[in-house]
Image 1 (cartoon, rainbow, N blue to C red):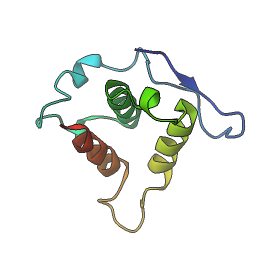
Image 2: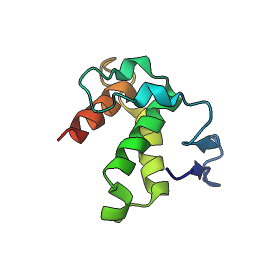
Image 3: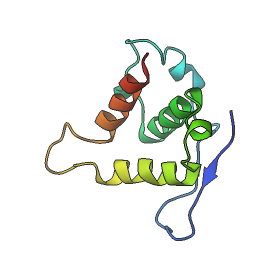
Image 4: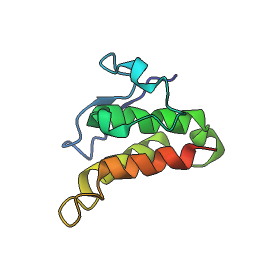
Length: 105
């Protein structure tokens, strides 16, 4: 898999993020295509990795005209702003769980 490091100069609050981080436990993703996979067992960085891994498996960036930078911005905004205060269920974990189930064929 490609190593992607994203740090937009216009967004200094977004810390350097490496999707292919050595801190990611790759074993957590072995059953990604199983209904037993539990997104609630992942931390936020691992959720970013999950989202990236799913997009790579679907060849999302090759099939559509979405840059990796634009996609990272979307995921970052979803994590930061996805209805955190009004409804505790609608959050980053819910969004990524929805992405995971959209991936299933």
